[in-house]
Amino acid sequence: MTSFAIYVLAALAEIAGCFGFWAWLRLGKSPAWAVLGVLSLVIFALLLTRIEAGAAGRAFAAYGGVYIIASLAWMQVVEGARPDRWDLIGGVICLAGAALILFGPRTN
Image (cartoon, rainbow, N blue to C red; front, side, top):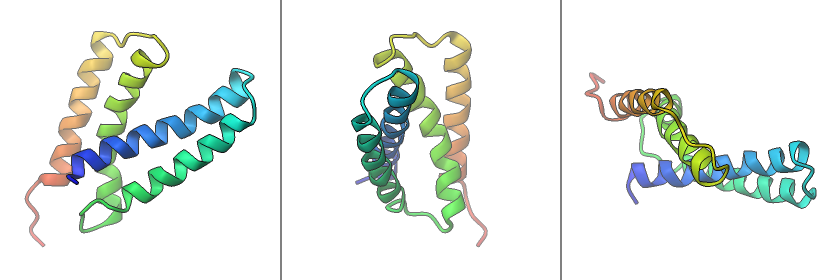
């Protein structure tokens, strides 16, 4: 599986996990939502360890850009709130930064 695919799956797992707690604590859903959230966050952590990077911090930093794009997609698809142009421009900038961090040339 490619790094990008792992990042996308990790982002979906993290967002779903956090949303489980949001639904429980902010939307009054059943505590079962939090349990599912915990399971989703465990999957997120396991996926993120599959990234090929020389340092954990680099893998986590690059993940940030993918997370932002996935969050904007979640906002539209799940919550029904359409990202505006500033959301989209900011997301593209973050994704470009993530690609630079992950794929940029290294001297060591």
